[in-house]
Image (cartoon, rainbow, N blue to C red; front, side, top):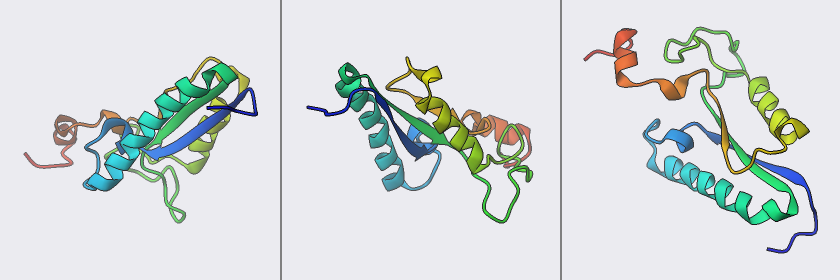
Length: 129
């Protein structure tokens, strides 16, 4: 790949399902998102010689327009959904010089949602056995 630009950052945004898989019931969405992870890694390797970093942000449950990010959400271990500004902060970080040596990976911003398992849900009495 021949690039005109040297140095920079490409940041993909994708639902958490692409990072962990099995978090949604939509196989098309999950497989498309998984392809984005593969693209992040392979493109990072391809453009690294031009000092272009490629990363992704995997995000969890976002507060809807009409609800506060601090609205209780028992499925999220931190207890609330993330705000769009939380994702924005991740983008700013990955685009900054503070992340100058980070490439080919994903930053998970999910309030711990990716840690949730069936046993956690049962312990919190959110699902029946």
